[in-house]
Amino acid sequence: MSCCSSNPAENFMPEDIQEKIHNHPCYSEGAHHHYARIHVAVAPACNIQCNYCNRKYDCSNESRPGVTSERLTPEEAVKKVMYVGGEVQRLSVLGIAGPGDALANPEKTFKTFKMVREKAPDLKLCLSTNGLELPAFVDELVKYDIDHVTVTINSVDTTGEIGSRIYPWIFYNNKRYFGKEAAQILLERQLEGMKRCVEKGILIKANSVLIPGINDKHLPEVAKKLKEIGVFLHNIMPIISEPEHGTKFGLEGIPSATDQQQMEVQEACGMDMKLMQHCRQCRADAVGLIGEDRGQEFTKDTFANMIFDELEIKYDIEGRQESQAKIEEFRYFLDKANERVRKEKEELSSDGETILVAVTTAGEGMINQHFGSVKEFLIYEAGDRGIRFIHHRKVAYEYCAGPDGANPIDGIVEKLKDCKLILTAKIGGCPQDDLAKAGLIADQSYAFEPIEASVLKAARKYFNLPEELEAN
Ligand code: CLF
Ligand code: SF4
Image (tube, rainbow, N blue to C red; front, top):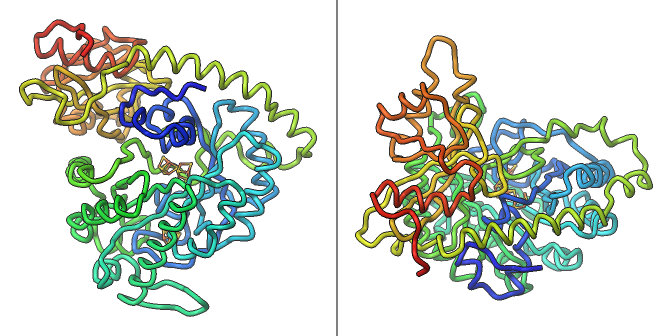
């Protein structure tokens, strides 16, 4: 398997790490256009309380708040994984991320992993936790070859002051702890657990929920600490907070973090740590490419009555391998087309001038989605020398499904007001004119072309430079 990626940061990594992340859609930004993940909800209990969580729903450390998934037994979960693996051959990762904390339910979590290891050996195994019980399970993680672990860590303040505003209590060693003491114990356990995982070669991704007014200014310190202990990737997740979610923060009126706040904090943290910028805060029962939502296609009645012999045929491991070999071929040519286009922020432009470019895509790294059906835009920063990925932005509704009586373009213009270009596979004259009035150029001349190379060409066209860039 070629581990070459269009992302230069990934190409500089040791080969064994490139190999590990190559088809993990969360750990490799390149992989997320091509490979899918599945979460199975086998872990209902939790051992801490976060003020952005409502226990009626799933763990919002790794999923969208306000979403409930179908609870599964380990056996049902394995059946689901095998069924989905047969249907979605690009499925490469199984994650256990709740609905409570994976390690507060160790029996169910590890029983599921053990069975999946046997029955679907080509899948990567991934786990997400608040970290309180992580030190106790490092050997178990190694035993089942679970080499991708996410820990949500929102503060490294050793006084417990910041943490106590986020966590009212934890339950540890059969005792409930409150306030600063609880936050201090949680932090100690998180750091110890992450260090021990790193020593064992487990790739740690850290999630930090960006909570404006509480930890936004503190997150660069978190990033520094993460780098110090050898964490692989840092994911800044903007808090999604509405009163109707019934969380403490939502009821207190703490609002969701904005795209701009996320960009500022990413900027400040990115000085120290490699950032994940393509997280979509998935639905808790998410299946498919990141950003895609196929969970509703695979409810219990689709797989629960099948026996394992039938599911083995359905899973069709050889068929999956053939299909993934084709993905790799496609990816190889895509990476060639995008070669040398990605740059670090300071190398994007010869004169410091850059613009933000919004792109519409249905996956596979191509500009292949019509403007009218877009629910989220990918945002890139581009100069005359190169481009970099910033994040995605969701819009409240697609242009073609906008609310009655209002111009559906308004919400989209508001979301993209700091962008200059939109690259899309197709757009009608009306929305194109409306966007132009708001100062946004919509360009469909890169339809069905690779995203990254097109963003650079379009930016150069915008700067009145020749579109083709000499090799540099
Ligand atoms: Fe799932 Fe998480 Fe593993 Fe990915 S999700 S357990 S690392 S397989 Fe990915 Fe979804 Fe973001 Fe999580 S986009 S919410 S980071
Ligand atoms: Fe909720 Fe997850 Fe926090 Fe537990 S760890 S309280 S499930 S957000």
